[in-house]
Length: 548
Image 1 (cartoon, rainbow, N blue to C red):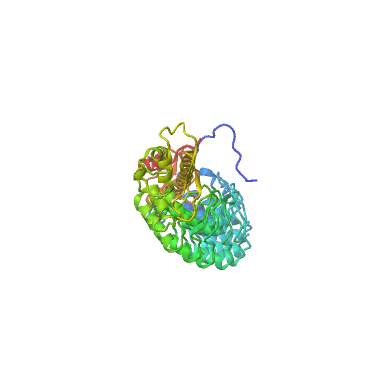
Image 2 (tube, one colour):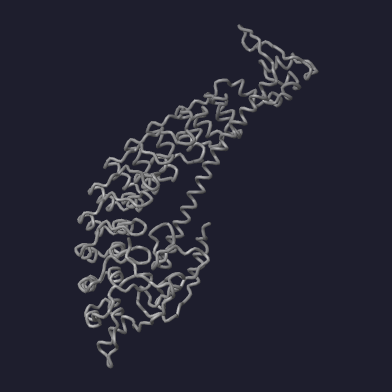
């Protein structure tokens, strides 16, 4: 249970504290008449002598100021170790949290204040203390890339395999950030590698592969990460392929990742995906084939990678597959070959060179009247316009009244030694047409799945880039993939107002409405003078919206 100050239901009368900036406080030591420094200002300035001078026992040292932060919390945030020591010696309570459930040790770890963290631990702070979101000090250290702080916490017995309420552990965060030094530290201290990560869908190896942190991928594999562990659908290898992380793909394949694994949900292999999606990009396909991928592997409907390349008009992929042993004569479960699903003449010409039944393929494509999928052309074409073989024989034998004629049997004269009857039925061409359209529909569904995946990936990349841009230009802290106020850590959804002090330190409308009296960064007295930051408001308007 979090310790909080108890407030009455009625709004308390605001008491204005007279403070000055750190600069003015320093000036008071040299100018006369002396300016009286309040205890709050002295702590904010980081000057221990002023703190000692301003302190008296009547002061409530555990008073919570804006957003519930105590002076101990602020001193730990700033890294004022000697002041933290003074406050603790005079009764400061390290178990008072702010309005967001964070304790002094959490903020010290997030900022990498190693000396303050160690002092708090020696004074009794729990190294695995949970905040309101079930985050420990180690979570703050790892997510803040604070290596020395994380090392200190582990040396004091922090649980290296602790996980938050979303089932995400420290190793996942470190791998996601690409922090190789942090990953090695966690592994040396016994971090479990193959526990699935966020919502049990991704492991540390998955997220490192997805983001292309190939050095982290190599490190995890060297420490025993499973190459066959799957998330909701994909293996680490497919995650790297799908997000075009070539170096990570190389590391995974060299380590023995299976290039023929099944993609869950669509029951396909990586070569199917590459042949259909990666137009004129052979880098990934060649690596898979070089490591043993089967160019003639079939998915659940009997389609090969060559079928997919043909349907997508991926000419370079088709040429590559054929040159590495792909069989153009393989038929799907519905009887379609790669030539059947080809859409362009260039692709058809390529596939004809690798098709066994040249005359049949030619009669189906080149003859004006002999399209076997069109019974009208077949029935009424002049016999002399048809290629020799069963089509010409059948057309010659057809009566003029096709609609009233019974099904015919004609002789296949293409073989001089054997003559066998061929049933002449117009349902067969129509059935073949149906099969072709069903194959096209299947491939279009696969394309739709790929497009949806691309859209989701693009949205994530856009959000991540916006966050990086915002952090670089505004100073807002972005510990997650959301925009958070650096004071209250709440997410300001548009429309909202953003304010700043005279020095440019930013805070959100929620903090302002709570009666913020001092800037939490520079401790300048605001006195109701809030400056709107409209540029940042426009940025937030463009990147967030209020959820339903």
